Image (cartoon, rainbow, N blue to C red; front, top):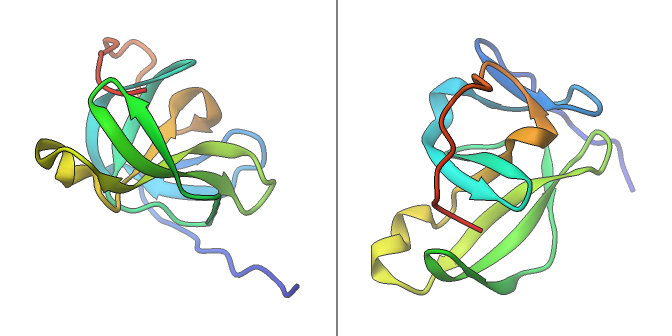
Length: 120
């Protein structure tokens, strides 16, 4: 296998809670209104230092989506998922975007943000 090349980010960044690998920046947040099985999550335009799992169709609150789980390349922890395909036209904006689950990351997010009702 070879050595993994890791991207270092600057500014207000989000990191893996387990190994501190850089994952994304505050500027890449598209939405703070996502929900996952274990609480809140954010939708990001760009996430780095991840590997992806197998594509699968999942029924979520907003409908059927083809997604892949995303994993931190530093420690292998599952940190969220990436939208590959949205079956509903109104959800197409999610394609190619990633969701990071707040309980799996550290960063400038405010733990007092109101919970929402959007996905998973």
